[in-house]
Image 1 (tube, one colour):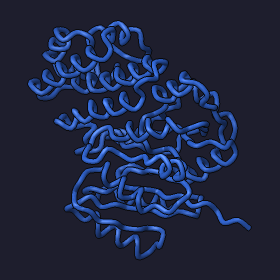
Image 2: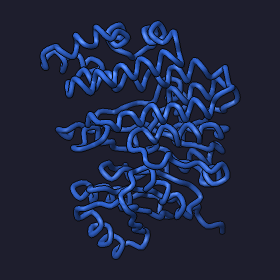
Image 3: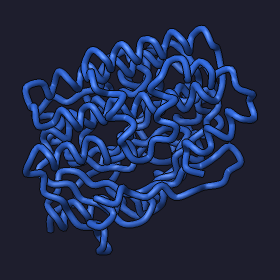
Length: 345
């Protein structure tokens, strides 16, 4: 009888003592048994390491690796180097998984022969409420069986659809380690924001089939205190370095240009939404000017294109520096309403 394939689950850990136990409990409660859980402590200065070693004593599937603080990208690379599984999954230390997540993702890959499996997720707010974030309609139609169905990636248009419409988080998915090793796919060391996108884009280049599993499988903490995603800082500039890497990797594939432009525009849209919530105006103006320059150099018609994209609220405001400056001066109550509308509430 053939042994079950192993899944290596990588968890970078930095000062996550408040959420770490819930995260580990959800991962170790998976209905799929053949797991190794690689927890990379990224120079944490709280009780995270102690919590991990307590779990490791009780469950041999938990492996703890400590490193000097170098950021989540480097921590994940360390985990990738240590992983022994046939498949790779990623979980963030402030998130949780549904008990059947990895069993369902693996079943989808094995049933369809896919290189990647993906499911919907829950977005958990600060008040603990969870809303379902469904897969894009292009993929949701595929997930119509208990184990999901697959999409063949046969053309630049197929690849472009995955690049722009697949959730660009690395979590909530399952990857073949063979592809990661063979193609030497890694995260960009030293970056702390949006490094997921680079890894996923590199992986998608070598994905011949992608499977989609019905139903949400992952609990994403949308407003974690201190999260880079929710903190205005120079780390936001990592986005541009990530996008430069992706544009370089796909250079020469002209058919992908509209999709690469859309990818860049949707990243700008997210930061514009955050800017409309308020914050340091000097930083915001510098960041907006840089964003406009970045987009204008690479995609001269980006303003017209952005106004035509679906799901982007207040596109005319976001494509005008004077209007964005006016919006930044608006009362906080109005900014909140704008932001909620942008999120689709």
